[in-house]
Length: 104
Image (cartoon, rainbow, N blue to C red; front, top):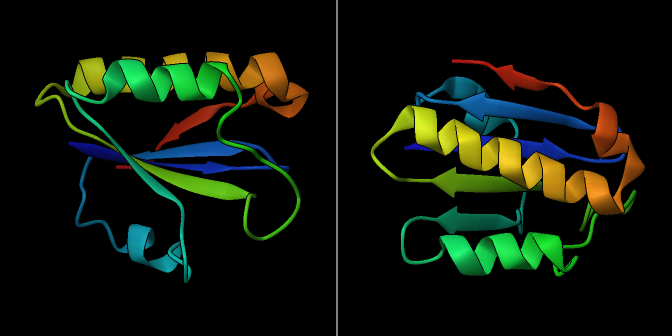
């Protein structure tokens, strides 16, 4: 499993393969958006990113999101993050230049 933090409008994506990483706790906020992606939710969640179901903007309620991705395969999980990034870039130009930081 990994956790990925997506931030906008100062776009960055931070991936944590160690779900016990202290930095994860530092970036949490009240009413934090969290989506869980696994084999049963993958297609639906990717469709949601593709159709702009998840909105991003400068307001505190929509400026970030955590994704918890669990396929028991870190390589595949990172590819899911890459795919999410590509889908976001279709709707939000700042994500076109985002780099993914593999923190731990």
